[in-house]
Image (cartoon, rainbow, N blue to C red):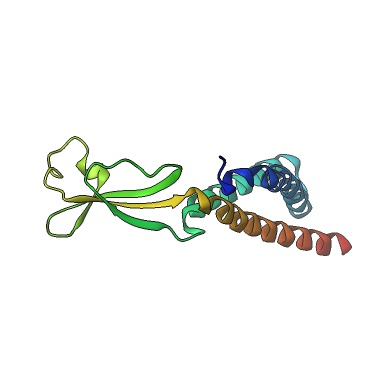
Length: 151
């Protein structure tokens, strides 16, 4: 049986496939209005789109609160989860990152594993927050563009 978050994905495809190219097109028009040079417009539009995409991708794990869980040592990742962070819990209660433990014996005495993740139920809320941010940026670009064209 499909999870509710999985069945809602086709409904949101239009938000993520149809809206970004439209926003990029309007951003290109706005940059063209400001610079009035073809090659700089192409470069600046590409750089702005890549920057916004990178910032949204970097911030995506923070769009919705994560689930923090303590699990037995060497336990598997939860099913259908987006793992954000995994750390070994040492006997004194401190946590050591999993990258520090790789290839060393430093974490042999760990008592458990601390997991920070987004379960599959968080997929749609994260996508809605991202869509709202991109929609707000698109409205900002369109408003600026229309105000600039009216002059």
